[in-house]
Amino acid sequence: MSMKHPHGLYVLFFAELWERFSFYGMRALLVLYLTKELSFSDDHAYGIYGAYGALVYTTPVIGGLLADRVLGHQQAIIMGALLMALGHFCLAVPNMFFFYAALALLIAGSGLFKPNISSLVGQLYAIDDPRRDAGFTLFYMGINIGGFLAPLLCGFIGQTYGWHYGFGLAGVGMLIGLAVFLLGRRRFANYGLPPPAPAARNPVLRILTRRSIVWAGVLLSLPVFGLLVLNDRLTGWVLIAAGAAVLAWLVYIVYSSPRVARERLLVIMTLTAFGVVFWSFFEQGGSSINLFTDRNIDRSLFGWEAPASLFQAINPMFIILLAPVFSALWLKLARHGREPSTPVKFAYGILQLAAGFALFGLGAGLAGADGKTSMLWLLIGYLLVTSGELSLSPVGLAMVTRLAPARLVGAMMGVWFLSSAFAHYIAALVATLTSAPATEATVALPPARTIDLYGEVFLNIAMVATAVGAVLLLMSPLLKRWMHPRAE
Image 1 (spheres, rainbow, N blue to C red):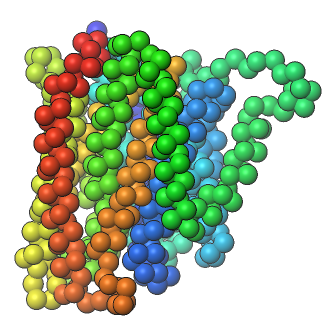
Image 2 (image 1 turned 90 degrees about the vertical axis):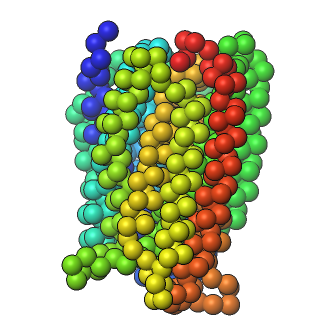
Image 3 (image 1 turned 180 degrees about the vertical axis):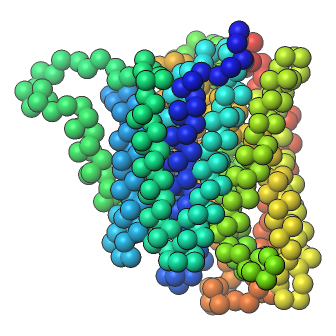
């Protein structure tokens, strides 16, 4: 078998690159914009960030089902890209109505785009293709090239020339991603097509296309998403309800499946739960670590103080450098029969994240009297967190597309992203632990006061992650057996 990747992978690579450029451009600016420009408290900003992130990763459950049963993956991707582009341009309007409308559009668009482009990548490979993990790792590198460019361009322009210019540039990136996808569709023309439409008995339904019905549903959902972002506690209850419904569905699917499929689904569910822990801590990067960088990192470079948003490029920069290394490593180990199992890779990822947060906490403890600490702690800590991410995230995407039954790939990809929804919401709750007491104005606190808050939380994260990673290592032999030889 040739070890070259399908040509369609490179089209999806660049389409996802620009979509992630738009997402990470907005992510780099959001909490800083809320606290510095709108003077929101840390807790309020974290709440909006958490609710938005949770909903962005909840809607893929619906988007995956719509693609599997109605739209097909290609049409879902196109619709999602259009909605997200409009959302980013709404953020460029300095008005609170447009701000919340923009978040609603981004939530709806992400639900259609995010699970289905990953599903298309999985369809390019046979279920037992040894190139699959390497292909997803390269795809993940494309995500992070966009994530690297976004803080440098959107972040710098937003913090230097005006927040709304940065948000607008993110919208331009989304349009480029859509154009790349449309121009390259012939590379995967036979993948992700809509399922055959049943004949409609109702004369009204004969006139309406399935696509128009989906558009109507999307428009009706926008006010709901806006309300949920405004009330992050309500978002928490929605997540609990959605999680309970999805769990009940999964129990039914597992119970009704034959043994091999049942055990593979149990592996997906177990590793997804461990993924929630990883992402709850990882997503401090856009919230508490972002403000920690702004307030407590010495950002002076040759007499110039770099904007805090630029440091959001550290994680994707390391992924760009390390993703080819990990891709080659998995292939080399696979050829020699020594590749770690997927559960072991997950455990390594969590343990490396723990080491990274230990360095963040240590750096905070060694800060000077002014409450500022060297950016080297941030750089080395992010190196470890990134290495952990590469051990877990692309492997998780490949695991879902490999182990899920063919008829459930889109839905199970949605479940994988739903775990990130819970993680984003939990991440916001964790981030609030770094906030000052309610009686103090957090934004105005001097660095010497905030440094202890951040350091204590980061060290606690390191200890919890270490324990979780150790538990997963102990469980990995059982999980590997449940994956069955053809899945490994």
